[in-house]
Picture 1 (cartoon, rainbow, N blue to C red):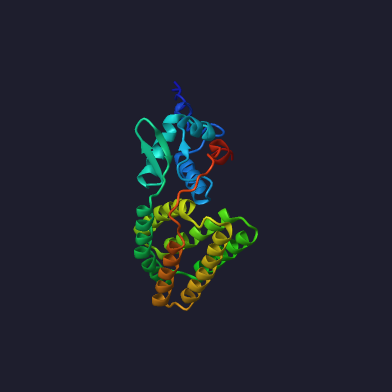
Picture 2: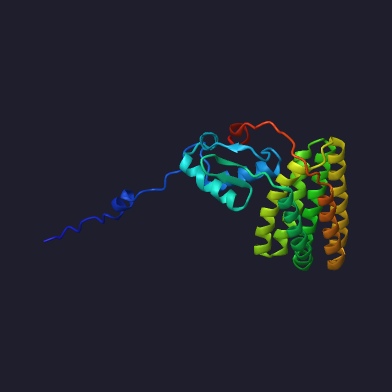
Amino acid sequence: MTTTIPKPRRARAAAAEPTAQPEAPGQFSDNDMYDRMVSAILDHRLPPGTKLVEDKLAAAFGVSRTRVRPVLVRLANEQVVTLTPNRGASIAQPTPQEALEVFEARRLLEPRLVELFIANATDADIAALRTCIDDEEAARASGDMRRAIRLSGDFHLHIAQAAGHQTLGRILRELVSRTSLILMTYSPSHAREREEATACGCREHRALIDAIRLRDAKEAARRMLDHLVRIESQLEFTSPVADAPDLARLLGGA
Protein backbone atom coordinates (compact mmCIF):
# COMPACT_ATOMS: atom_id res chain seq x y z
CA MET A 1 0.00 0.00 0.00
CA THR A 2 1.40 3.33 -1.05
CA THR A 3 1.36 6.11 1.51
CA THR A 4 0.62 9.55 0.12
CA ILE A 5 2.85 12.17 1.67
CA PRO A 6 1.11 15.49 1.93
CA LYS A 7 2.80 18.33 0.13
CA PRO A 8 4.61 20.78 2.34
CA ARG A 9 2.63 23.88 3.17
CA ARG A 10 5.67 26.12 3.55
CA ALA A 11 4.89 28.12 0.45
CA ARG A 12 1.36 28.77 1.65
CA ALA A 13 2.62 29.89 5.07
CA ALA A 14 5.16 32.20 3.48
CA ALA A 15 2.48 33.70 1.32
CA ALA A 16 0.40 34.37 4.40
CA GLU A 17 3.19 36.35 6.11
CA PRO A 18 2.61 40.12 6.03
CA THR A 19 4.82 41.99 3.63
CA ALA A 20 6.25 45.44 4.24
CA GLN A 21 4.10 48.04 2.61
CA PRO A 22 5.87 50.86 0.81
CA GLU A 23 5.16 54.38 1.95
CA ALA A 24 2.38 56.10 0.11
CA PRO A 25 3.51 58.24 -2.82
CA GLY A 26 4.43 61.74 -1.72
CA GLN A 27 5.18 60.74 1.87
CA PHE A 28 8.50 61.36 3.57
CA SER A 29 10.32 59.51 6.31
CA ASP A 30 11.10 61.27 9.58
CA ASN A 31 14.72 61.70 8.49
CA ASP A 32 13.60 63.07 5.11
CA MET A 33 11.44 65.67 6.83
CA TYR A 34 14.23 66.58 9.22
CA ASP A 35 16.80 66.89 6.41
CA ARG A 36 14.51 69.06 4.29
CA MET A 37 13.83 71.44 7.15
CA VAL A 38 17.51 71.68 8.09
CA SER A 39 18.40 72.27 4.43
CA ALA A 40 15.82 75.05 4.20
CA ILE A 41 17.35 76.66 7.30
CA LEU A 42 20.92 76.32 6.01
CA ASP A 43 19.86 77.71 2.64
CA HIS A 44 18.28 80.73 4.39
CA ARG A 45 14.82 79.86 3.01
CA LEU A 46 13.25 79.53 6.47
CA PRO A 47 14.03 82.76 8.34
CA PRO A 48 13.97 83.08 12.12
CA GLY A 49 10.50 83.47 13.57
CA THR A 50 8.75 81.54 10.78
CA LYS A 51 5.63 79.81 12.18
CA LEU A 52 5.71 76.07 11.58
CA VAL A 53 2.03 75.19 11.45
CA GLU A 54 1.65 71.45 11.87
CA ASP A 55 -1.27 71.18 9.42
CA LYS A 56 0.73 72.95 6.69
CA LEU A 57 3.83 70.87 7.34
CA ALA A 58 1.78 67.66 7.27
CA ALA A 59 0.24 68.69 3.95
CA ALA A 60 3.62 69.63 2.49
CA PHE A 61 5.13 66.27 3.40
CA GLY A 62 2.03 64.18 2.73
CA VAL A 63 1.92 62.77 6.27
CA SER A 64 -0.22 63.08 9.38
CA ARG A 65 0.33 65.71 12.07
CA THR A 66 1.49 63.00 14.47
CA ARG A 67 4.38 62.25 12.09
CA VAL A 68 5.43 65.90 12.05
CA ARG A 69 5.59 66.44 15.81
CA PRO A 70 8.62 64.21 16.59
CA VAL A 71 10.57 66.02 13.88
CA LEU A 72 9.76 69.37 15.46
CA VAL A 73 10.81 68.04 18.86
CA ARG A 74 14.11 66.86 17.40
CA LEU A 75 14.75 70.28 15.90
CA ALA A 76 13.77 71.93 19.18
CA ASN A 77 16.30 69.77 21.01
CA GLU A 78 18.93 71.14 18.62
CA GLN A 79 17.71 74.69 19.35
CA VAL A 80 16.82 75.54 15.76
CA VAL A 81 13.08 75.39 16.48
CA THR A 82 11.20 76.90 19.42
CA LEU A 83 8.19 75.06 20.86
CA THR A 84 5.85 77.31 22.84
CA PRO A 85 2.81 75.95 24.75
CA ASN A 86 -0.48 77.00 23.11
CA ARG A 87 1.43 78.77 20.34
CA GLY A 88 3.07 75.91 18.47
CA ALA A 89 6.45 75.80 16.75
CA SER A 90 8.52 78.43 15.01
CA ILE A 91 12.04 78.77 13.66
CA ALA A 92 14.25 79.93 16.53
CA GLN A 93 15.20 83.58 16.78
CA PRO A 94 18.69 83.66 18.31
CA THR A 95 19.39 86.48 20.75
CA PRO A 96 22.68 88.41 20.58
CA GLN A 97 23.86 86.47 23.64
CA GLU A 98 23.06 83.14 21.97
CA ALA A 99 24.90 84.27 18.84
CA LEU A 100 28.00 85.08 20.86
CA GLU A 101 27.79 81.72 22.65
CA VAL A 102 27.51 79.81 19.36
CA PHE A 103 30.61 81.47 17.98
CA GLU A 104 32.48 80.92 21.23
CA ALA A 105 31.63 77.21 21.00
CA ARG A 106 32.79 77.08 17.39
CA ARG A 107 36.06 78.78 18.30
CA LEU A 108 36.64 76.06 20.89
CA LEU A 109 35.72 73.14 18.61
CA GLU A 110 36.88 73.90 15.10
CA PRO A 111 40.59 74.52 15.60
CA ARG A 112 40.73 71.04 17.17
CA LEU A 113 38.65 69.54 14.35
CA VAL A 114 40.95 70.94 11.68
CA GLU A 115 43.94 69.47 13.54
CA LEU A 116 42.21 66.08 13.50
CA PHE A 117 41.33 66.56 9.85
CA ILE A 118 45.01 67.04 8.99
CA ALA A 119 45.89 63.89 10.94
CA ASN A 120 43.26 61.76 9.18
CA ALA A 121 42.37 63.36 5.85
CA THR A 122 43.17 61.77 2.51
CA ASP A 123 44.09 63.66 -0.63
CA ALA A 124 40.51 63.09 -1.78
CA ASP A 125 39.20 64.81 1.37
CA ILE A 126 41.36 67.86 0.66
CA ALA A 127 40.25 67.87 -2.98
CA ALA A 128 36.62 67.82 -1.81
CA LEU A 129 37.28 70.97 0.24
CA ARG A 130 38.73 72.70 -2.83
CA THR A 131 35.67 71.71 -4.87
CA CYS A 132 33.40 73.11 -2.15
CA ILE A 133 35.21 76.46 -2.32
CA ASP A 134 35.09 76.51 -6.13
CA ASP A 135 31.33 75.93 -5.98
CA GLU A 136 30.95 78.60 -3.29
CA GLU A 137 32.79 81.17 -5.40
CA ALA A 138 30.71 80.26 -8.46
CA ALA A 139 27.50 80.70 -6.45
CA ARG A 140 28.67 84.08 -5.20
CA ALA A 141 29.64 85.18 -8.72
CA SER A 142 26.17 84.27 -10.00
CA GLY A 143 24.51 86.18 -7.15
CA ASP A 144 23.19 83.05 -5.46
CA MET A 145 24.13 84.10 -1.93
CA ARG A 146 21.92 81.48 -0.27
CA ARG A 147 23.81 78.69 -2.01
CA ALA A 148 27.14 80.38 -1.24
CA ILE A 149 26.35 80.47 2.48
CA ARG A 150 25.17 76.85 2.42
CA LEU A 151 28.39 75.75 0.73
CA SER A 152 30.40 77.70 3.28
CA GLY A 153 28.73 75.68 6.01
CA ASP A 154 29.33 72.46 4.07
CA PHE A 155 33.05 73.30 3.99
CA HIS A 156 33.18 73.30 7.79
CA LEU A 157 31.00 70.18 8.07
CA HIS A 158 33.23 68.25 5.68
CA ILE A 159 36.25 69.05 7.84
CA ALA A 160 34.35 67.76 10.86
CA GLN A 161 33.24 64.58 9.08
CA ALA A 162 36.70 63.68 7.81
CA ALA A 163 38.25 64.53 11.18
CA GLY A 164 36.77 61.30 12.49
CA HIS A 165 35.42 62.66 15.79
CA GLN A 166 31.73 61.75 15.79
CA THR A 167 30.79 63.62 18.96
CA LEU A 168 32.40 66.91 17.97
CA GLY A 169 31.06 66.49 14.45
CA ARG A 170 27.50 66.06 15.73
CA ILE A 171 27.83 69.14 17.93
CA LEU A 172 29.22 71.18 15.04
CA ARG A 173 26.32 70.23 12.77
CA GLU A 174 23.94 71.74 15.31
CA LEU A 175 26.13 74.83 15.66
CA VAL A 176 26.29 75.30 11.88
CA SER A 177 22.47 75.18 11.68
CA ARG A 178 22.24 77.75 14.46
CA THR A 179 24.90 79.86 12.75
CA SER A 180 22.73 80.00 9.65
CA LEU A 181 19.90 81.49 11.75
CA ILE A 182 22.36 83.93 13.31
CA LEU A 183 23.61 85.07 9.90
CA MET A 184 20.04 85.55 8.68
CA THR A 185 19.27 87.65 11.74
CA TYR A 186 22.46 89.62 12.23
CA SER A 187 24.33 89.73 8.90
CA PRO A 188 25.30 93.18 7.53
CA SER A 189 22.16 94.97 6.44
CA HIS A 190 23.57 96.22 3.13
CA ALA A 191 23.78 93.80 0.20
CA ARG A 192 27.27 94.96 -0.79
CA GLU A 193 28.60 94.31 2.70
CA ARG A 194 27.04 90.84 2.71
CA GLU A 195 28.69 90.05 -0.64
CA GLU A 196 32.08 91.29 0.55
CA ALA A 197 31.76 89.18 3.72
CA THR A 198 31.08 86.06 1.64
CA ALA A 199 33.98 86.80 -0.70
CA CYS A 200 36.25 87.24 2.30
CA GLY A 201 35.07 83.86 3.56
CA CYS A 202 36.15 82.21 0.30
CA ARG A 203 39.63 83.74 0.55
CA GLU A 204 39.95 82.61 4.16
CA HIS A 205 38.85 79.10 3.24
CA ARG A 206 41.54 78.96 0.54
CA ALA A 207 44.17 80.21 2.99
CA LEU A 208 43.04 77.48 5.37
CA ILE A 209 43.39 74.83 2.67
CA ASP A 210 46.94 76.03 1.95
CA ALA A 211 47.87 75.26 5.56
CA ILE A 212 46.00 71.93 5.42
CA ARG A 213 47.79 70.90 2.24
CA LEU A 214 51.13 71.54 3.96
CA ARG A 215 49.88 69.44 6.92
CA ASP A 216 50.65 72.39 9.20
CA ALA A 217 48.16 71.70 12.00
CA LYS A 218 49.18 74.67 14.15
CA GLU A 219 48.85 77.18 11.31
CA ALA A 220 45.57 75.65 10.11
CA ALA A 221 44.12 75.91 13.63
CA ARG A 222 45.20 79.56 13.81
CA ARG A 223 43.62 80.38 10.45
CA MET A 224 40.40 78.63 11.41
CA LEU A 225 40.23 80.67 14.61
CA ASP A 226 40.90 83.93 12.74
CA HIS A 227 38.19 83.02 10.21
CA LEU A 228 35.55 82.48 12.88
CA VAL A 229 36.53 85.68 14.70
CA ARG A 230 36.16 87.62 11.46
CA ILE A 231 32.68 86.22 10.76
CA GLU A 232 31.54 87.09 14.27
CA SER A 233 32.93 90.62 13.92
CA GLN A 234 30.65 91.19 10.89
CA LEU A 235 27.45 90.66 12.86
CA GLU A 236 25.07 93.57 13.35
CA PHE A 237 22.76 93.01 16.29
CA THR A 238 19.57 94.33 14.76
CA SER A 239 16.24 92.62 14.04
CA PRO A 240 15.28 92.63 10.33
CA VAL A 241 11.71 91.94 9.25
CA ALA A 242 11.11 89.15 6.72
CA ASP A 243 8.01 87.92 4.90
CA ALA A 244 6.63 84.53 5.99
CA PRO A 245 7.66 81.81 3.49
CA ASP A 246 5.32 79.29 1.82
CA LEU A 247 5.99 76.04 3.72
CA ALA A 248 4.35 73.78 1.15
CA ARG A 249 6.45 75.25 -1.69
CA LEU A 250 9.69 75.09 0.30
CA LEU A 251 9.40 71.67 1.91
CA GLY A 252 7.06 69.62 -0.23
CA GLY A 253 7.61 68.03 -3.58
CA ALA A 254 10.08 65.47 -4.75
